[in-house]
Amino acid sequence: MEIRKFNDPVLRKRAIKVKKIDEEIRKIASDMFSIMKEGQGVGLAGPQVGILKRIIVFESDHLKESVLALINPKIIKKSREKAEDAEGCLSFPGIYLEIKRSKEVFVKGLDLGGNIVEIKAKGLLARILQHEIDHLNGTLFFDRLNLLKRIKLKFKNPSLKV
Image (cartoon, rainbow, N blue to C red; front, side, top):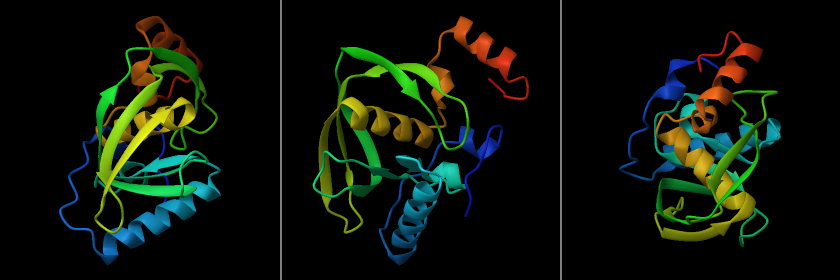
């Protein structure tokens, strides 16, 4: 398992729902945690390691557990209020972009025990969750840029399919 980079077509595919949380899924989550930490990231989604399953792992100081996995996460509600901040992505090393996202989100999913998890997040955690759930839908962070900013990004990174 390794982080898929730049123009890998798997990053544009929609991940499928996990039907059963078993040892295979727990092993995938564990491996994803390790890869995320090695890459000094704060979040990672299945497609980023070539696994088209709806699973994300992330880190947060704002929750009881400092690192979590969510299976089949879904954004239930987003605040209308938005904030723009710098985002990076382990699949796009060295690229940091100012991305506008909702300041707060309410996310539901399952933990590795199959229990329902509900997270009310704001700030950095809200941004991480939105970013990783986008990956599950084949959406990349630069897709959130307006046309002019996308053209500038393409100019600076000609090999990038923007």
